[in-house]
Length: 95
Length: 177
Image 1 (tube, rainbow over the protein chains, first blue to last red):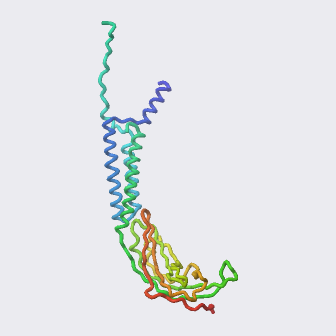
Image 2: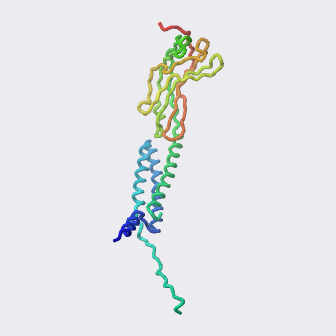
Image 3: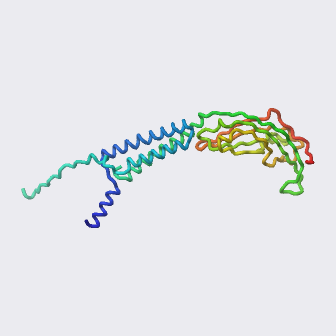
């Protein structure tokens, strides 16, 4: 394995690509979880009359969400793009 | 959203929007708490004493000393968005020149709900002087106990807790024996 290969491998790992289905899924999870966490944080804080509870709930749920959505977990790579087979170019001169 | 950076961007953008909405909701929730606590402010005594102005040694000036008693239960003002309470006693009178004065003579900061049930015997913390340097013809003054509620998020709100029912006259100035 050459140095260039190692570099390409590291870059690939850091970039953490996921497929299109995974993107859709991650975006949906982000939206639902954050909005739900905000509403929950407000409601619980209001009932317990404590701003500390509100911001702990929001902070902890944001961290959990980041952990669930940001790394390229295998769940988000279940639908790889199926490319069509390459067309063989016909050589016009040979005809 | 293909790379990690795109997903970090997506999460943090929505998180900042949610945080802003949450802060706005907290600020607006303050309007649900409409406590207006009542208390009492009794002026025990008012003394007027002649003296020298601190800055101009030859200038004669009169100083008023006000002793007062406060009883008030301000615990209803403490909700989840209350950071602290600024409490102040003011003397309101219109002097001979026709200027309406509202002189803050005492204040206190209350930070905790446990400290908000007050029974205070106090005297003016700040020097109480007349602009014309004499209280001789100053009309009787009303004394008020007011608060300023400072929230964590949102607008400051003001309110009055107590006011003397009758205006209290300034006595003749005399030396303390």
